[in-house]
Amino acid sequence: ALDRRAAALATRRLTALDRWQRARHIGIYWPADGEIDTRPLIAAATRAGKRVYLPVIRSSSGDLAFRRHRPGEPLQRGRFGLPIPPRAGARQRRLAGLDLLVMPLVGFDAAGHRLGMGGGFYDRTLAGRGRCRRPLRVGLAYACQQHPAIPHDRWDQRLDRVVTDRTVHVW
Image 1 (cartoon, one colour):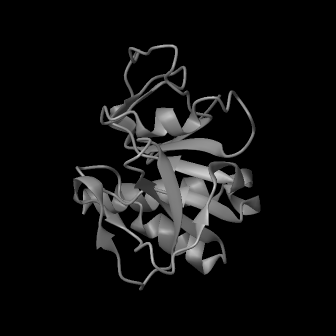
Image 2 (tube, rainbow, N blue to C red; image 1 turned 60 degrees about the horizontal axis):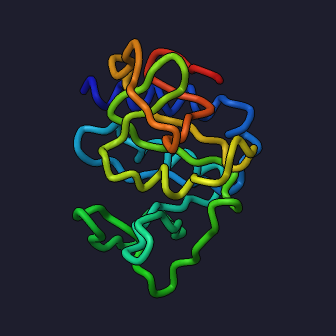
């Protein structure tokens, strides 16, 4: 029940953001391993007429592609057993074509550094994009996942926002 409440609060905060309101194409992760549940966010996006794209790990490069997801359509198991839209019939969108990218995390700090699961998929995907405006990089987290400082390397990609069940952090 607490997880559902946290997901609902974070969804409410994220959907109230100006950039969310204007966004038409949104990359959103499917929840796994105790990550904050994005299914209420996916439902809110669909109700608002936005297009949702789930990340798919490309085996050739180790970065992410984004496939269109419509709630109710079947998903298949991808790498690490994560649900992904099947390749057949799924429209893909390039990273630059997303207005917003909602990213999972294990931890974050007050400077916008993100600790992921260690695969580097988001960092590889965002590498070379600099601080360009699209897509807006939004971490979704429980407030308790904030740490004083996250160790980071020069190739680690910072977030533009972190939305939690308690607040919104902006950089």
